[in-house]
Length: 267
Ligand code: HPA
Image 1 (tube, rainbow, N blue to C red):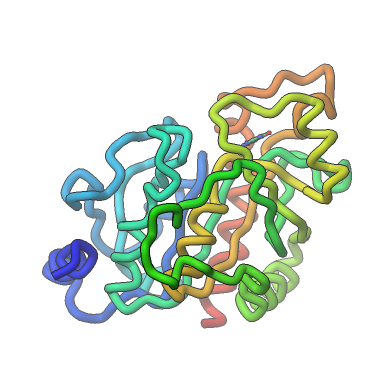
Image 2 (cartoon, rainbow, N blue to C red; image 1 turned 90 degrees about the vertical axis):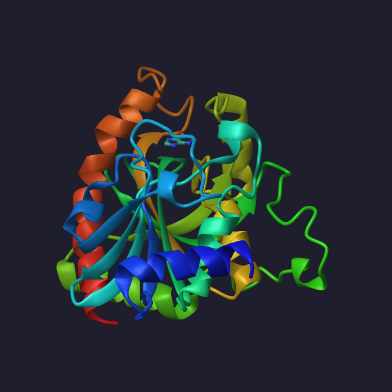
């Protein structure tokens, strides 16, 4: 039996047979939603092969239960490439989600904005992405399935439903292109200027590997960034820091939570 099938069997012992309809990955400072789920929290440390390293602002539990009447699997923490140098750290968690019968994934993250009209506290749904890292979670994957098309990676139907949910809540939800930098250092002002010229609207250190893995695994996927700061050099009087990310994330997260709840009601 594959590792993910074994983990799915283990998880079903806690949750019963009915699998989650959607998986949610919560980014830095966005963990509150996990506490709102009626269900059980399984620490990653009880799930062999799940990422054990942690970033402050993340909560390493898999919470399975219901939110707004929908069966959800909430990943309270994600592993990033910059933690241990593995771009495929989230492969087993996402394979396990798939093995539980789930076919949709919604990713959230904290990001720096490159656009004055998407300021800190705002939300940006990804309509595409750019991989500035040169890394890929599928390097080493031997099957031909590794040649994943990413033309329509950001699921049109999920995006339309999220936009609709935002409108229904009366909350602005910008759309744009997310650029993945490996981190953990923040970008330089020159990198931010270059990313802007190339068409990025926001930058961050996560999410793109999971989008690639999700498409590889046949999961439909969409992602939303909570803007916590302007990109390096765009606001010279403001220092960029992880503290700022954690402090600003809850501002956008409160709005994102309303949109996500409304979105779940539409499923
Ligand atoms: N750059 C990269 N990652 C980030 C940023 C940023 O400015 N803000 C939050 N995560």
